[in-house]
Length: 88
Image (cartoon, rainbow, N blue to C red; front, side, top):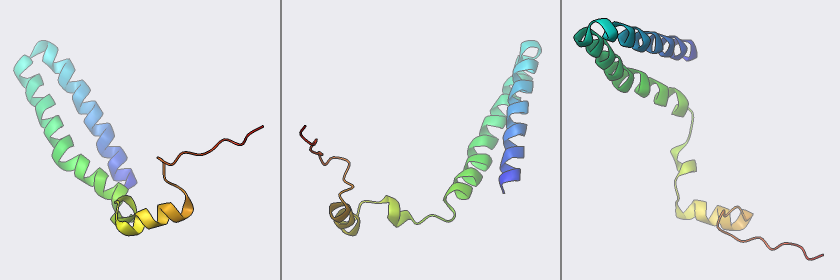
């Protein structure tokens, strides 16, 4: 999956560059190439990338639930909690 994403990303970059080069001579064709590339990026590449990054993760680890609040209080990993500095 990683190689597929790297290949798709490289193709997207090359197609964008090609679209901007063509746009200098043929504006309509260049705009179409750029537009199709952006659509491909939004509707094909990004969902694949998001799936790849989140496939083995538990969503409950990243949501604030009563259980997670309890864990944060017990371990003291609350980012808003002030830490007292030791006095000299």
